[in-house]
Length: 237
Image (cartoon, rainbow, N blue to C red; front, side, top):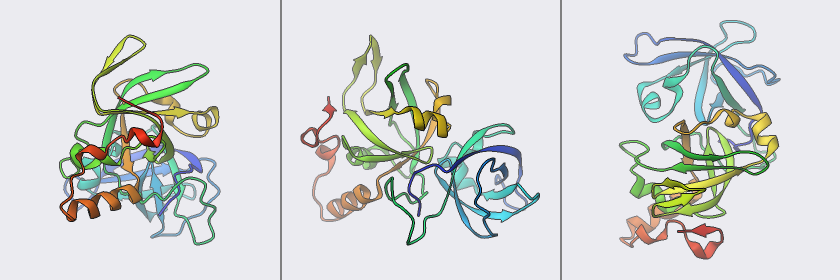
């Protein structure tokens, strides 16, 4: 379990095929300024994906074994030496919870649809089909204005929700988009400033919202009209 508050930005130092796991990956990361010294078996969120420390090949190097399912659901398969990643170690019972409860179980990927930079950084992201076993129809009801979302491991607040196609500054965007605002501290302390239109972003919906939706669905009640509840504040179109 994590909070979504990034503690350091690490740098990928190596990626190699994982033997004997077909299509797996051994990911080695330099944790940079991270002063946490994890033991073998400890959990670290790497850009939002919960991974286990498998080895310390060097004093300041963490090695993780990434299985094919994680590579299929996340953007970790796109990493190469020199890539930057957000890092957070698992919370404890006494950890200050300044973000929200994050499992590190990435639901899939969303894509950056539009960027507004300058004094008011805003990013619009498109939820199409994040992954085969997490279809958009199941996750969209969890996208709620002023609700929480985890993007590349970072806890953020949803600023607006758009069910239907719409325009931003003359740019046509598809339906099933949502936006987040990024403050200067977030841009400075995370990898989010590197996002560009088309970037693939690890996405985890709020675990509490997913739990509620599963309960409602298992009771046989409709959920399709719950996504982007305008009554909770924010813009919903």
